[in-house]
Picture 1 (tube, rainbow, N blue to C red):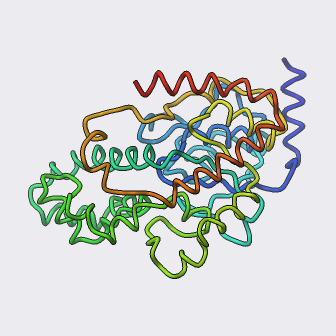
Picture 2: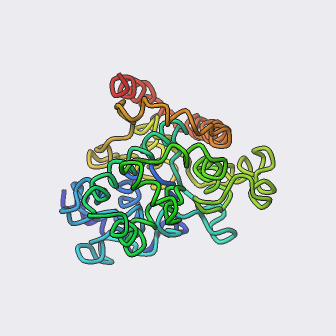
Length: 322
């Protein structure tokens, strides 16, 4: 045990390879931050874990939306545990910065319909209570304008930083306005989140802008970018993705229990079955997911030890979704 600890500590002397750039669109596997942490901090205790602040904010390491390094990292771990500069983050739910990050991006991808359900449920559940606590619409608009509310919505592609939309939210009984969701502009900003990130655009970029369309090129632009990603994982195959990340990036095939905790699939609920979910038609992210899936299985084919987890993940996903 002591020999293993000494070996791990000596490995911290210098990064094994160039820094990775950790990218995570909203509602796409933030639990994966623990595996990113293992890459950066190989000598940290095995039980150390990064939690979402919305789940377990009292923990020493908490992830804010995800922004690297996680809160508490520098307070609880040192250069003797971690390569502090082994991981880059473009910011809170922000895309890669090209050309700086070209070839170094690691990211998970999620089925577009699941991501949208999770996104809307997150917004509704987190803002419903805060909205209803306000004495009137003026107080609500003040809260949106002067807190993190607007920025969180912005990173999810929901332009509630537009106070007119925030007013609709309040007047609609603190619910996401049907009329707003039905608008062409709103739909074009909500969809294509993962596609935008691959191409270097922020969440609220409309998929109809000339810049996005020129980069999209009927999916060819995304295909070229994903082909140069350092690592591609799928939330649908979470355990296999963690295994593949270890094999491809960390060069250490030992997955720790702390990396496999957390929820990675959308559970059915009343809101998810409502007609709101039929509004966005995300052809962009469906195409991007197909390309990411193809890249994932291409990488997986070279790592037979990780293929055994595909059936295990399938069983877990089926159990969660029923």
